[in-house]
Image 1 (tube, one colour):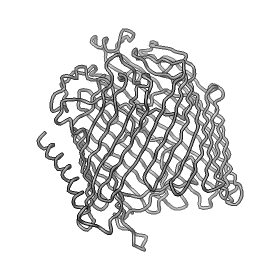
Image 2: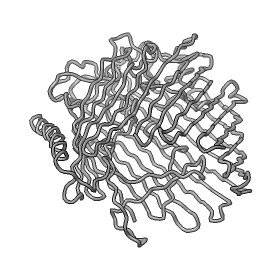
Image 3: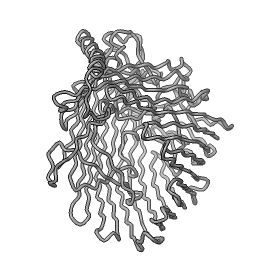
Image 4: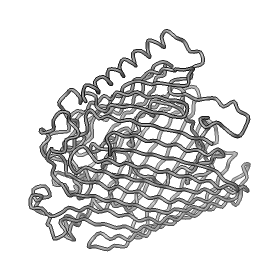
Length: 627
């Protein structure tokens, strides 16, 4: 097996070199820029061939007057099928609990359970795309590593008569795991209907989302030195838990009605709108009673006939209404609204009712084309008293060297439920009454789309910061501390070879944050156009790195990453070898993740006891069908 993988790796590296050599000798005058294999549509007919790329247009529920679009292209990102964004860590397998290595200010200041470790895999109401497509669009992604390690993603959009638009989204991760008791199943399904009335006087959105994460919890590898070669799969390596199970399920229905009472581009308009959302959330952890588990859980956890069990169920009803004053000719808009939440919380054995009221306002002004000013505020009332969010931003568009922006944000929130209370087997494990965490974020950014460059500097100040200590309990830092962050994203395009890099530097981060000082990814790749440009081949490598940070692990009972007294998380350096290919409307890739893991006896970690998979082979395919 290792011999075959070494042959594959050698082929990738030779292909990169060959593509560079070939492109240096042969000049293709009709070649598109690297990562942009667009096919120009020269047909006058409304009926398009199956593989004709079209511009995909969509809106968000927040503002249907702003239309976004993108084209179907073949880029280096198409060779990944990776469900997490840059700067997010996980437990080693697709779909596992996540955390950010570059913390930011959150915009959610209302009540929250705090169980957000699976949120990056979920579909969200605010970011759900409502497609507006006269030509129906379907995009499907599928990738597979082992026999039971699959990732599926589906997007569909179509417009019907009288302004009715239908959108479907579906994501599925199914992974049996490479170590004992590590199966992970994540499902995200969403359906949305947008009615954009032909008269332009009315918009209506209807959205149903169903998100779920079911994880077999093994508590981590108890004896990592026993991991052999080849490293995975290795089901014989001892783990801490053999029956632990986490279940998170979310359902929501959202509808928004917008009435355009006055719609005149030359004068201020008036929009009245109402938004209603009903959602449920189930959060459960369970394990069977075994005497050997007391060493893992600790003496504060007591077992009953069901074993160990944490159960929380949440019902959330939210309604908001407001008025917007858009002024199209002046490129301006102001908005004000009230938002009411009623939460019924069953945190076994407690039952609570929570009522929150928020006054929210926002403004967007662009009186001159080169300068845009934005502002947003949210103020909590009732049981949300003490929570608030304020953000101001200015954007200067120079045209010649891109856009410069600066912002200032402040936020105060209530402690999350899991940061305050935890009940297991109906017994209290901890109860704390912390002060409201407060965060101040100031930053500047430079974005130059023509040069594919984005760079920024921001400074965060944390007050009353809450983290989880070595006892796996929440703790609060009463004093203030700051975090400086420098980031840059840049892509170089030389037609026959390309380089894409993402870098984050956050020096001298506080130990309680448990984050690295330096994070970067870099991809270097070539491109070969074959058979009269009908086939495009992109061979290359991806490099992922972050330096070490304070010891950290994951505790499945409260679903939180926590500090440890053990060794620090070591430096993480991974090289993936990749070959990507595009044939008409089909895209495919073959990827060897953590190439060095084939030869070097070492394991990478982003949390103690949870190794990532070295030498992991994955193939994937993507198809975009139009008309």
